[in-house]
Figure (cartoon, one colour):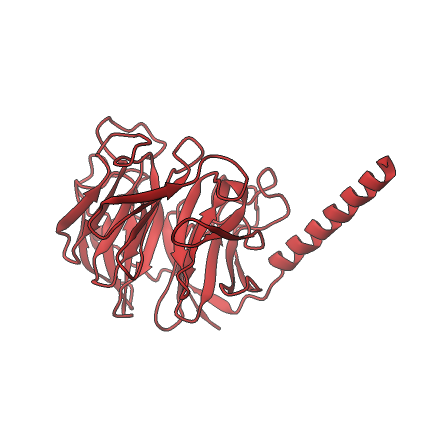
Length: 336
C-alpha cells in the first residue's frame, strides 16, 4: 500500500510539473508598448490594479493609488480616463477614494470603484466601500459604510472588485486577503441586498481572497480565488459550476466579446504556487483551453511579493492593458 501511495504521489507531481511547463511555455503573440500612458504635470504612477475599457472602445479607465500606495491626504485624482494615445482626457476622485482596487464600467458608462484598505498605516474612517460615479465624477451611489469593516449585509471588509450584470444586479468580491469576508455579495440595481455566498476555505464555494470578477456571455460569474490559486465559476445565484486551476494564481480577470478569458498572475513564486511563472494567461472562457502567455519580464520570479500585471483589460482592437501594483505602471500589449 505504501508503494502504491508513493507511486501515485510521484505521478501526480510529474503531471503538475508538466502542466506548469505547458502554462509557462505557451506562445506570446504580443509585444509591449513601452511608456504608453503619460500622467500630467510630471505626476508619477502609484500602485495600480484597476483598469477597464470605456464603452466607446476608444478610451481606457484606470484607477491608481495617487503616486504611492494610498490616496489618503493626496489632492490628486486617482481615477483617470486615457485616450488611445495614452493621454489623460478626464480625471476625478480626489479626496473620495482611499485605496482603489477594482473598477468596472457599466452599460450606462458609469464608473464603479471598489475602495479597499491598504497595508500601509491607514487612518480610521476610510475605505471599505463601493462607489458608483457618473462618467464626469459625480458620486451616484455608495454601498457599505465608509471606514466600517464588518460582515453584515450593509458593510464590507476590504472589497476587492465590483461587477454589474446586464440586468443591473451588482456583485462585490468582498475580502482582500483571508482576513476579509471571503464572500461574494449580490445587490439589485438600486443597491438593495439580495444574497451572498462564500467563507474562508478551499472547498467549492469557499474562498481565500476573492480578488477579481468577470462575467461571460452566458451570464456565468468568474471569481479569481487568488489565495487558492484557482478560478471558480458560478451561476448568478451562487451555484458552483466549475473550478479551473490552469490559469495560475489569478489576481485580475477580463472576458472580451469573443469569450476570450484574460487572467493575470502577479503572485506565483516558489513559496506560492511553485513552478508557475507570473504573467497574463489567455484562453477560452467557454472551456478553459489555454492558448497564450505574456510572461512577467522580471527575470527573477522570486524577486518580490508581487510583480507583472494585477489588473487587466482589453480594448475594442484587442490590445491588452496590464495594471501593475509592484512596478507601479500601466503596460499596453499589442499583437506582433
